[in-house]
Image (cartoon, rainbow, N blue to C red; front, side, top):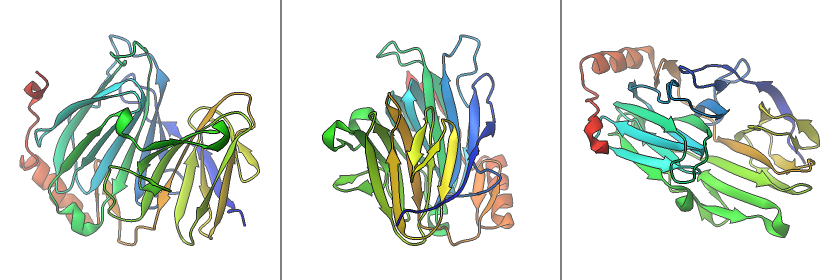
Length: 290
């Protein structure tokens, strides 16, 4: 049996400086999909010399941030002393744990000459026991992301988080979770069986796709019901299309989110701010890049 759509919606503008960004999650219908509590879509654009290409230094606590860069390069700094660049197709993953400050700067891919930047940032909510752990960081280049071609030249699937068949993501799991990038060739399809109660949603970054016999448009976020069932994704276009499919088991602890912090109580949010202002998250050493 195919899963039913619970709702579909489009994001709202949440620009950072001159970067054009659409906030996809949270939205007016859903605060989370499994452990995922946030999704921003940086739409394809050419950065200019006057554009603010970075997010600026800011703190996080209680989550893992995941930046997936389709096009461009992403330079990461943090107050734990981590520094790296990832390029088109790469991932920046950071477990904020008990508190960290980071900064990401986006630019055109210096290795390929492609002038566009395009990507996503997800926040993955951590179980309460992991919120108290020390920060961790991974820079994952495109060729390190588990990927396989689909049968009959149907396209590909990349496993950003979780697993799919014999593919296992490098990023650690703190609960049952998955995040896939699927590209389908014209006339091709792929199907997934989703277990009972697993929360799952799809996002179409640019072009249309047909999900369980219903055509959705580029820019749409689609969430499905909680019943066990199949999701069939079809490409009925005359060109390739991309789909982001993600979700996981429900987050059963209380969630209190404010600004860059996602905790389990208002008292923990207040403590996160106090610790930040007291300088307990450290300071970024930008000389690491030299």
